[in-house]
Image: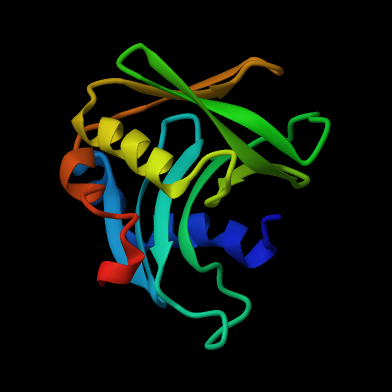
Length: 167
């Protein structure tokens, strides 16, 4: 389950990178409170972020730890259940990723963390395709959602991003 603090992180991190850097390079990157991140917000306000926190739970139990990915929409969706497959389509190749759902008053967020259903190695392979790809859409089948994102700058921004232990 996504925590409110983890949901606020994409907004804080999007603000932490100057808009001109995001527009010029596509993906913004940085390090904040033990978490390395790369992300961007598209023209419609949808956000995609890839994170890796090296903070231990013992140090701060409110901070999400390890690798995780967040996709958020600036609108409330009527969704059933606590999880849904979110499809990442890179250069025409679709990869469904099971993600937890957090519906708020004015937004809907989806979060991936390592699980048996979609492992860290599988996410690393997807992130590698983002690094090398040309076109990306992230979306849902029901309700129909398709959000385009640029992959400009993703090669450098996403390099080894999910390797928390190597930092």
